[in-house]
Amino acid sequence: MKRKNKSKIHKDHKGEFIYETYFIRGKIKRQKIYVVDGVPAEEFYRQNADPITLFQNGDYELLYEREINDY
Image 1 (cartoon, one colour):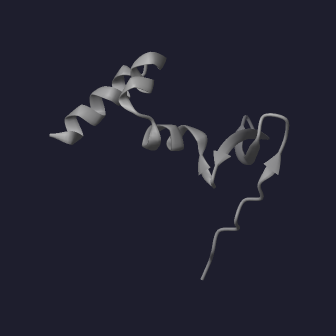
Image 2 (cartoon, one colour):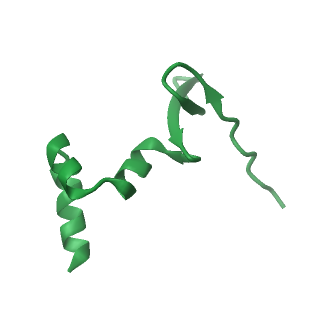
């Protein structure tokens, strides 16, 4: 039985993040993914932003998705 290791949460001046590793041309690269309460920041924003905030930030596609799901 395999289990995925839990990612370690690191901190810097912007906040908490985890590293995501990926390969490009045979080399390992690392990317920072900022988290809020253990959830990636983009997903947290998508789940918790109100319609006014989405409109002000220009995220019309997310606003449109919510309108479709509400009906």
